[in-house]
Length: 245
Image (cartoon, rainbow, N blue to C red; front, top):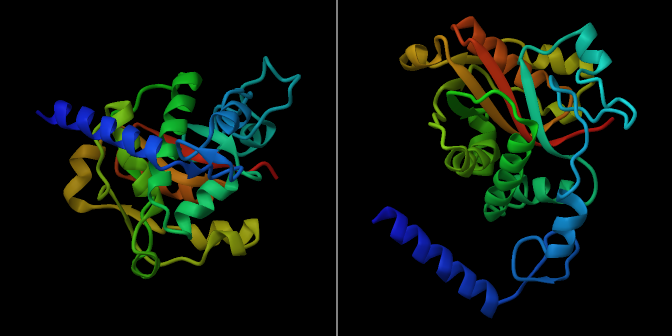
């Protein structure tokens, strides 16, 4: 019954898109979907080489290298990372539209692109999916957690169990984007813990943690440290976009 209802919903959505064309979220041109075919081909078709540990783009001549120099010198706390795109114009508008514009339908698109990146990267399959939690003040202000909104459809696509209460934020932190890299590390220190009622789920598990954007990786590293303190065997970071600076 659930499958039939889902198919009916998808058919209805297709009819509505055909009758009421919308504007592409990237180029603004007429489109039957959130992103037009042209932008899909331009921005989401090519696969670039990325560091297996932090998902930073690798130089074109580094085809035999799978880990960047920064990760060799100072590995992140998570074991692997996957990113769908670079955080550059106009792709950053998808993140900003979801995060600050409240355009929740974008979350499903971001999840779809991240799912495709996971398949292409061929990373080890996690046993459990969660998302970076927001602080209580920011959650109350925004009304939703953009990482959780991406994680919900992604869990369905990956066919993985999702637990959005696995990680807890121990304290509100300053926005990472406003801080120097050294300050970001201090800002996130001991910011997360594992909910006491979820300790058995974490022990020995391979947990994938979803976020919208990775910049320095400090937020996801701190989440990984918390999970490993309570027995996680492996942590993979899954992000829609990765900064390139």
